[in-house]
Image 1 (cartoon, rainbow, N blue to C red):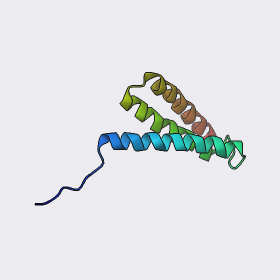
Image 2 (image 1 turned 90 degrees about the vertical axis):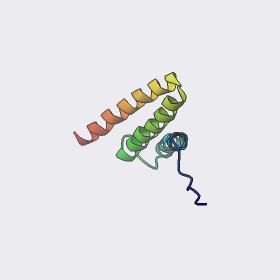
Image 3 (image 1 turned 180 degrees about the vertical axis):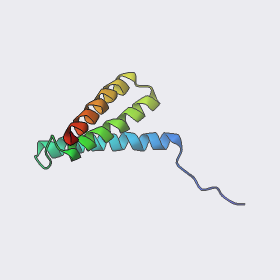
Length: 87
């Protein structure tokens, strides 16, 4: 009998996105707080943008409306901040 390989399901992908989001936001805050990266730099903004996107995805998946809305605003701020770096 041939066994099917176990692949990631949607729940696993949402969980990975959520864990990445949490780690990215903590990393951004820690790195900027200890002046390892500038708080107005691209790395900081990308960590915030991608981190908030990951947290928004898991919150949406779990139906946590407040967190979804918070992270939508966080994403919008990140997009604007990154755009301003290039204008």
